[in-house]
Length: 458
Ligand code: GUN
Ligand code: FE
Image (cartoon, rainbow, N blue to C red; front, side):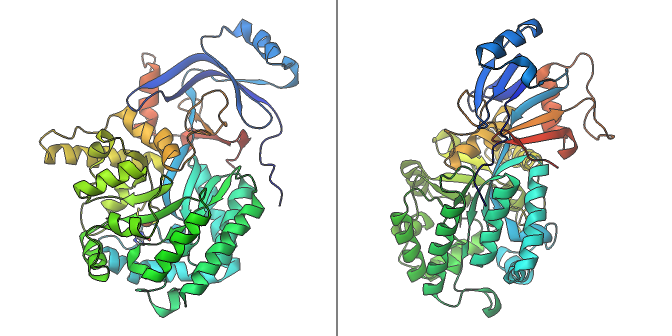
């Protein structure tokens, strides 16, 4: 395997592009010319270009215009940054939709562990992970932060598949050495740590410059890791300061109670994970439903990111609402996650819509104090916010010149197939067309997906 994933050809687009300027503001660039260089980086972006100027601009960028075609996008089509799924379980790909209405503990023991255990079979892992990565790319997820199973070999396969298919990814071998059945847990702490080190090295060989795929240290949660394992993972994190960390954090009452029983010496989960050296500015904390005041301060000060997973939070036994407005107010980094398969859907559009629903519930619950998320904010969380949470803000999330071209080509008109998305009317503004995509679109509207300039949708 080599690491030359970029397209190898320059690309140019002429039409409408939209990205987040800030949390609350979108920037629509109309009659915009975007040039992507051979390495997959955005070389130029000019707004309000008249079609007659295109060749001159390309010549200024050093391209003979006849060398490559400019893709003209008519009204109703646009480019936007690809989606960043900050929390997702690859071995749960085949269990999506199964087992709702259970407590987290029952769901893990009755549904999930049996599915993840199947990844001991490497051929099964190859097949299933190929389908999983393709499935996410189809839906415009250009970056995903994956939990694998606890099997090092299968998780290496997942990293290789992301690399080969061209998905930007954080990939984690899951650590779990207790509170799971014998047939699905790691036999010893030593093996778990050795497999983690070996996995990090494997990914470093696969993609030495972390162009696409990075390893992520992945203790499942404190319930499934004893002190020695958490402490060993903290050491690995210190030895590898560029490697991010992810875990489940304050997800559910039962989980919080059991964590406290196991670790009575810590007042909160933030204290616990901080003690073991697992809270850094590269830590991704999934769920974050019930945070004490001090924990929010810790997250803010340490620079940890929140992976908001509203679908999973409303699929299990309780309707759980993460106070996202409060996190945003405090300047804590927030991104969106599908949490596929705890979440029944692997669509970021659906995750965004559910984020709107739970934010509205939260607003009602707080009598308007926590205002619901706006369309702009939802899109920000799905793109730029996710890039921040995954430590990729300098590379992706917007269409700034110099960033890598991870993008979706959205078609709300000229679809090859009947669409369920809201049809475009003559009077619709660019904003309304975009709004119709976010609120009614699906993968059928995502005609093309680019990662680092490479077209990756089948
Ligand atoms: N907590 C520990 N493991 C899991 C998991 O697989 N999914 C979710 N949602 N929470 C967890
Ligand atoms: Fe999860």
